[in-house]
Image (cartoon, rainbow over all chains, first blue to last red; front, side, top):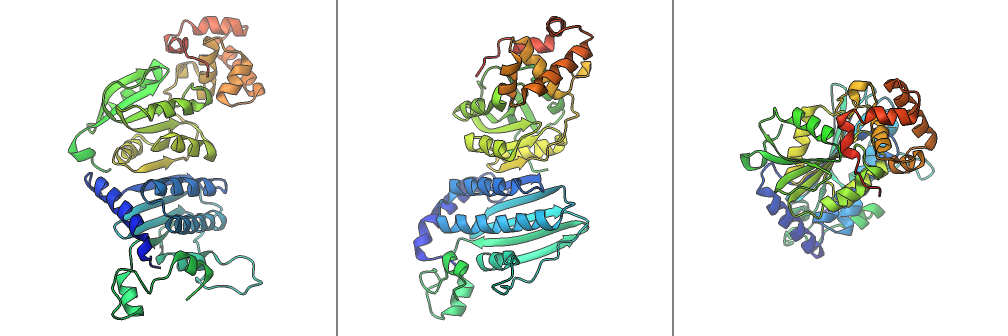
Amino acid sequence: MTWQSSDAPVVAALQSRLSELALTGDGGPRIVLKVPAEVPWVPACRHLLVGWLDEGAPDEQVRDALALVATELMANAVEHCPDAPAVELEATMETDGIRLNVSNRSAVPLEPKPPELPEPDVIGGRGLFLVDRLAEGLHIRRVADVTMIEVKIQTMPNQQSDAEQKPGTPANGATGSRSATDARSGAP
Amino acid sequence: MRGSPKGRQLRVALVNDFQHVVDAWHDRLRSFDCIDVVELDVREDPKHQVDVALFDTFGHPSLGIDRVGRLSTEPHVGAIAVHASGLTPLQCEQFVTTGARGVMAKHQPISELIDSLLAIARGDVVVQALFRPSDSGTWPGAHLGFTECESEVAGLLMSGWSAADIGVGLMIQPVTVGEHVEAIVDKLGAQSREEAVRLLSNHSEFRSSSTASRW
């Protein structure tokens, strides 16, 4: 997923915040949420995450993508690991995007379905498909009894994929990019 | 654990309406070199520049959300961390929306609390909402066998609050207030609520709330 040139103000706002906080070291700003693995905490985390993001990058597309991806990952963790006492969500602003980690401790390993769109009459099963379309680098690990899912929401043009799509196109995301809205609608 | 801001100590103000509460937290934090407890604010706002004001919700009507709002406008305060025994998801959101950069459960190990304070001072938002009954015993009357809830009710009784006001202020049912009052009376070996209040007045840790204002 990449962003269009109209996203420049967002990127500038993000970079400005990042340089401010870079003075303190330890990388970009983070939000860390450790909450009970219970349904009412999922929307609360989404609201907190969106509020945090609004401080640095009040962009609707980034916000929507992050909110949806975080909600899907947390809801999966809560629904499929009923013995997990807690879910932890950590989002970090990086120079080219926002990295999102969702982890939980459970004796039941989370066995995610492949991120493929199920048949139209099938209920559910679209969570990871959406995550895969809206984010990059979906990576699932299990270490001991902890399941960790990591993705990244891009806020900067993905130079490599742009170049691959349209050789010779300036690598500034001005053309040949696919917006979050396109991704949500499944457009190629 | 992450380092303190730019290698210096983290300047912290401890804020609550009870001297006993801030003293207890001061005792717990004083052994950590990375923390400099600059001031203890009992019913007052920080006067010195601090990286983090650690606000304890104990004994605050409506959890002290309005107090956090006021703290967030203080130019001396870099960030606010809220320390609570139990919050709903909505209450956590309200604290952050009001200006807190952190919400932490009191039962959290002290090392994790410090780690969270350091992260908050750097600009992170940290919500650690795995609430369980606290065993830290930092509240007034812990040595009398009071639970934290009973201690909050006792503090407000000492301030002359009615059971109905206490219920509204602490956001608990009147019947629950009644149960707490009954437990307080029993634990003090008193015969009535009035006698319990008289006995409580002998315990200095409850006195600091006597001028606590109603909302």
